[in-house]
Image 1: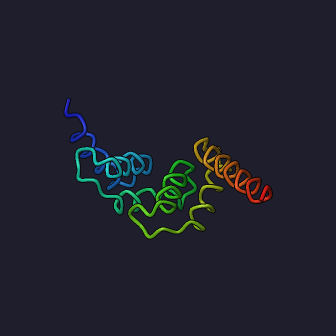
Image 2: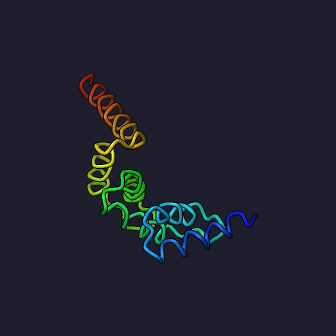
Image 3: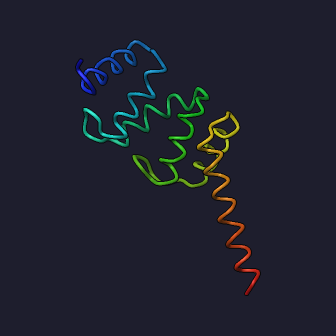
Length: 115
């Protein structure tokens, strides 16, 4: 009972008490705008705290936000560094993103070489 609104309150209480795992969930609620106005900057702030602690999922989310310029100034170089760290820590989405990017770059090189 309570749904997203109750979850938001509990995640916030947990974060206030220093419970790090709740940061990701609270960040996701701000990212998606669930039970709260969508706030990419707040989401980035929460994800970034976890990313600094080496959380693979938080590294992926901050990389994605840096890459797209969501809630923070776009910084592709910093994003790529975080995608790499996230992938090295086992995040499958980061690995897939980097593989897709490499494939696109290889396709572009092939087209250029074929001119």
